[in-house]
Image (cartoon, rainbow over all chains, first blue to last red; front, top):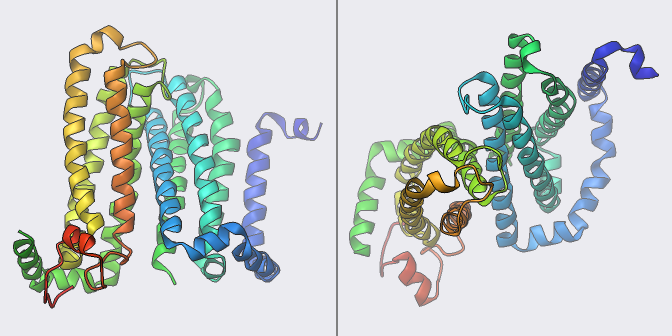
Length: 193
Length: 189
């Protein structure tokens, strides 16, 4: 009922609203949420993940490696799919097939990335709590997930021939940029603090 | 041999650009970030090719297409990683050359190259008979598993280089000192 009121672009409008609200929240109410979330970050360090991450450096480094390997898989899936959409990779394979197959790989990579990311965050919870770049990464990750599942995926389910090529290319470019942002902010965390 | 490597590393360490690169916070971090983030291109493409051979990705796309089309971006990625890797070594030559993890990584990189050569040779010899099948023959799949395994350990070793657990500057068991090539009385670490 509610979504039908928004016409044929319900998901896009809803996603844009969520992103808009998140940004407004980030730049206005963030300081309050920042204070509220402190006990949560303190608790994270006391969990099993937190204790293991802090006690055994090798375990932490090993999980970091799994995180990096899944990042590589995510990068491969994004670049292959968007490369096909932009017309410079796998051009002799149906774009529908490439997009769908890469989506499966991206979901797997994302599941591993988030699982290992939670473990790593528990090990250094109070450190990342005070790092602005950690929050930028969370913002980028949230934007990436929302963009992928609620903008790009529904859009590219349509027949690509019927969509304005400029929109399709801009979507592909935005997808590469948002995931690059997630990776780059993650790397930046390593340099901070 | 270890003395030769050590002397070469000390010589590199004494060059101006090595010190400049090491001491430059932004430049060093840019090079390191490029090295790590290019994983998304090089290993990303490699994973797609290996997973295709194992039947876990693009099962309905001919294997030859995946291997050929993704080979170019993969090689571009590896070239960038190679160049940035050399720069990272150049910035910290003594410690890197005496790092057990770095040494294992170098041996594994050679193993990866040999495996890739054999993998492509075997693939090109037989691909016409299984190109459209979801899974490659056993021999090719074995090569794909080896590739995934070797590269995963390469990344693990690369990550572990950052830690000083097995560095010569600390007291190490004789076996580790042998692997790292630590020298008696060395003054530079």
